[in-house]
Length: 335
Image (cartoon, rainbow, N blue to C red; front, top):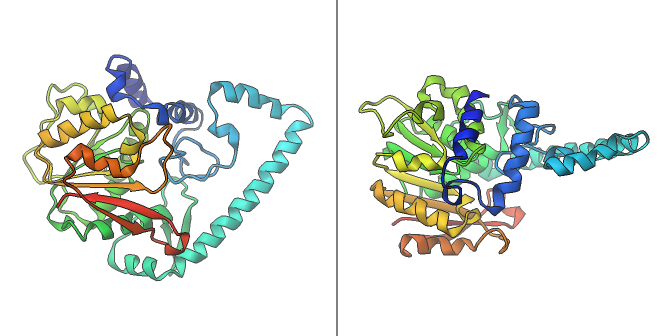
């Protein structure tokens, strides 16, 4: 975990008001660190690992994996004789409910016409690595449900953009790297990528992408030594995985910038700073996605995202992939 230690140590030296997680993510990131150090990443998309809760597709069922230090100390009470048996029984019951839920959504996805169309159009390669539990089987092949949701987003964004002509991509808040993995798989013309996320999320994303692209991933252990971070003048695939403060060292031109959901979870001061760099990079295309529900105490209305781009983005609302869920997603795209 040398990379994680580097990120944590260097984060102490930067302007945390701009380049560290805001109120929405502070508690989540503390819990993520505890889980990474305790369990590693080999099954971060499973039931038993809480490292990626909220930004990966794991399926948490044990509340003890979702607590900070104080919560975990209090939770030790469930290890006492008598109480441990009651708590284990509750976990067993919860696990049964989760298994039933997964079987149900597996049937829903495997028989959905929208899903069938996406599978016939896009490539889905190794989408269930790291013990992904939220998946379904279609024609004897396992598919990550999260990857199908990504495909649905790209399909809707393709109404505004031609990704087959995109060469350079910049994504802030890239989850665990699945969106980048899916885009590279389906659009090999995308060669130059900047993936930026807060600590420790960027650590998980870097390791996930290394699993597929190995040395083509340039992580913080390499970029921190550079005075200027830029793409090589060639057609080789490059994925620059950087923490937020390294945006100040970027010297790039970007064809397409993308953010899904996380902008509304940041302090507005942070979003304004990022937007100033997006403009600096002569970004040609912009796509933003966000969910339809928000909490004023930690997030802001997704429609307000347009104000950071001089109200120049086209705003549309779309149904989720599974329309029966009766949820909507907002898309803000440059015209």
